[in-house]
Length: 497
Image 1 (cartoon, rainbow, N blue to C red):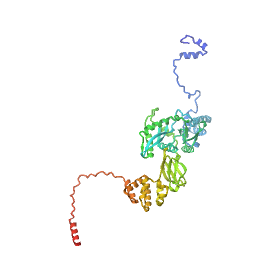
Image 2: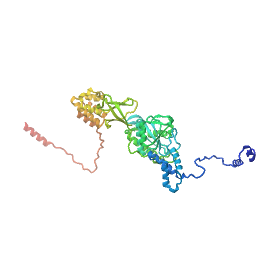
Image 3: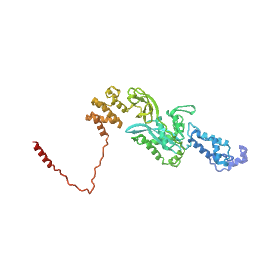
């Protein structure tokens, strides 16, 4: 109106009802850029509490690593500020109380359904990924647990045969021990091993075992909305990163426990690279994560699950809906027994919960059996005459049954005890190999079986040829003269004649 139509400021004011000063302000304006408004800057008198807010925030954040009953109240914070700053602190209790109440809501708020835009140090996210691996030449369709610290982008991983509760607990404990602390807040999805039921309003009915684990390590568990794994964006990315960088090519492992220890060291070394956004090394940022960790508990957490199972007539029981079968001992036939299940083992316990027999835990959806023969062989060695009348005889592999048939009845007890000794020193597979060798040689006695086992298990020595050093004098060849002995023999022979 002013520049294009030539209307005066007074006329514009009459037509628009804007004040003349306002009209002149915009006519004279030359900078039309938009600048963000800092809403945290408040007009008015200076805030008295401002110089002490950093101290209060520091105390409240430190409280996250303390037991609930040992955290600061607003009254205690007011008292400490008065003691430390004395006359420099002139705020009333209500000012402190209002600020503490507001900050506690921000720090301890359970923000279900979304992640905060800015992640604090010491906060973590957890998820499983899938990866194949070979363990002692056998292929497993395994799973690896991932923990990611969004603040630093530091990640750690552990490999297992499954993704059950025992694997989750053991993997997290391994990582907690390695980093020497526990994240104060950990994000999870709604896995059935953790969440028994998602309730209205976003609450979760947690499983008893997970509640014990959470309380033992004193961390806060936060959960994503159902079917919203993207809410854990940091660890979702870490799942793919670990698969590409830790499990390609497919790992060939002889000892899973040692491999997992090496994985933690690899994850530490991997942090010696720049953060994708912050321009600082991940390892340097992770130092801040570690400063905010909760101290480890002084008491070790038992990750095992304890069950009571019923055995059949051969002393066996099944798990995983009947597809995985484990042996115990003939004395436990048709009885209820106690067992302990860990991520990698199934352990048979006696009535006093002491370990008696240990199995490697079976995984997969196919029917499998784990057989520990030693208790059965020890029992048979005491009663060799009843061998054929027990269900144990039919379970023996063909070479073992054939070999026992070739042995005499008096020798069977010693043979069975020898096989048991071989199992104790090595394993049942080695005993079968020794028996197969004995069949080839027709050696149907205990001493021969022991000798064959020793030969099979004695490592071959790779001896390099010895070189004679220079300077050693050559000796004359010694020629034996036996003519004197010949003469004596002839004389003796003549006298005999």
